[in-house]
Image (tube, rainbow, N blue to C red; front, side, top):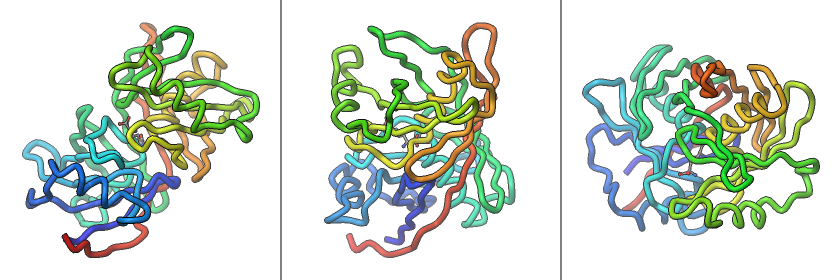
Length: 257
Ligand SMILES: N[C@H](CCC[C@H](N)C(=O)O)C(=O)O
């Protein structure tokens, strides 16, 4: 089976053209093995590009643990770049993911992905929580460099407030009046990743609400820079949310299964 490796700000994915629908998607052990960094290709997740009758394509996303995940923002940008590389569309595309319709625009060095509208930001037992296609907690800290993201993130991810599904956990430090540094503990990878697209989207919206940052918010992650623009609605929700940044092919190969 042919596969490709893509990365978006260091969030990396095994990507498969499954337009013929033959990938064994219910084989969780296979997906987990392909994502394993010692026994497999190595990735934070695996994405299938499938056919859809009403859209240009359909995105099916699995976390590194092999289970189908909720929406993945960086993965969305990568699958858009992949579809563009395959010649599925020219510049603008409309596709279906687990959280519904997405539109995207491709440029030479960036992919702009329209995210699902967000209904609001809630306080859950003292923690700021919102769903940007995936569930996210956002915690602002003063010294992100030295924070133990895995230990602190894991404690929140498995805490009673977020059972049974759990949550992704983002730690953010304000850098100046328009930029934030973000580190994320990702559910389903069960580790810190270099960047999380739905996570930095969540941070930008919370930064607007809590720190009065205006759109677009510039985000620094370990794997590079992203930009999030949005429109704040009177009812506390957000729409016209765009996640913008690089997404590129790293290599192509063949898996023997
Ligand atoms: N890395 C992804 C998030 C994956 C979400 C996953 N960890 C889950 O909660 O199922 C992103 O760029 O948005």
